[in-house]
View 1: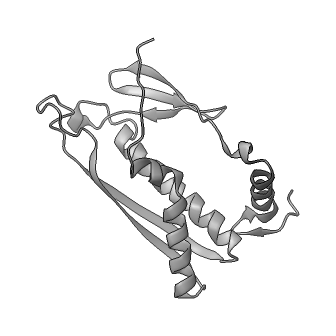
View 2 (view 1 turned 60 degrees about the vertical axis):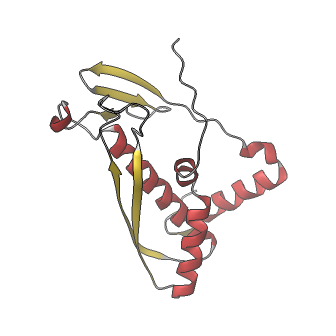
Length: 172
């Protein structure tokens, strides 16, 4: 597919083909994703997804780790940013908008009281997450605003984080 028409380095025909496939066979849209994690000692672990190299995880030294990799809450911010980047690339391409540069800065507030067992029943997760999108394009401002609205309205990771999702964790 090296001769395929591309915008934003996205193969337009691949995106169109997927949309057409889901429209003609809605059951194709229901997907299942998997990962497995192997503990490596101390606060280190590795997540394995499909046939890719494992993604390492560790805690910073301030939390007792070896600081050899991003920790899980940092990876979660990265997952949101990566998901948004895919959304911008896909939706900009579908709208015929060329992206010159895209950078997403993310940060979040997390209170360690519950995680450290110092407060029962509290929230061990993020209290707030902020993302700032820096998008450079020659497209008119109203088209960029439309694109932004569509991306935040269709982000799988964004939707997962912004609403209650049943999580089942069982001991095998």
